[in-house]
Image 1 (cartoon, rainbow, N blue to C red):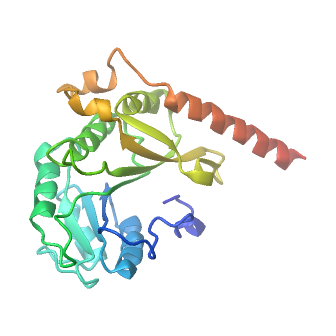
Image 2 (image 1 turned 120 degrees about the vertical axis):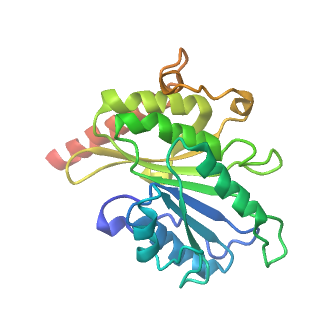
Length: 251
């Protein structure tokens, strides 16, 4: 999920093809041209049971379908490993339609209905006007009825490159109220070729937040009276790593 070409291979692997159990459903937000979804689909096809759902604005979906060889009806050259569905951030109906569709799909392996197990967000946190809608969609996808109280919460994997901390920090302060998150193994932070700091976070919905009412206004969702310090702590850790990295280069 990192942006550099050499990192298109997931390391550590996103999908363990030797892992047994119920099928996994990977839903990517803001898929764009479908590069990340295509890479996940390659690994998912090897498992023989997993599903990838690429999403974006309705007007972007035809491009996704073309790039991923998916027809509007959902048929795929990759034996229905990949689906393309419209999902505008902040649109509750789009999110709930995907959840409803998954629960109607029979699993040929004999397991019960499908559910979203992973939500992929590849470098989506940068447009200030879209930060509240992005968080709102993440909450829609991790709240009932999208997720049953009897199912495990989806694992949210987010890559993030710092562009404007003053504009992006409010998202992370609000995100941390609803989700617990931490760096993904050794890719917790990285210094890109342009010198900017980048992160990959793994998050899950906080159980206590499932009973909270999601604010209807974006300003209340991002600018509430409460905030979480997880991001600021991880940022300081990342800056420390960056300092060490710089010192090693100088030496």
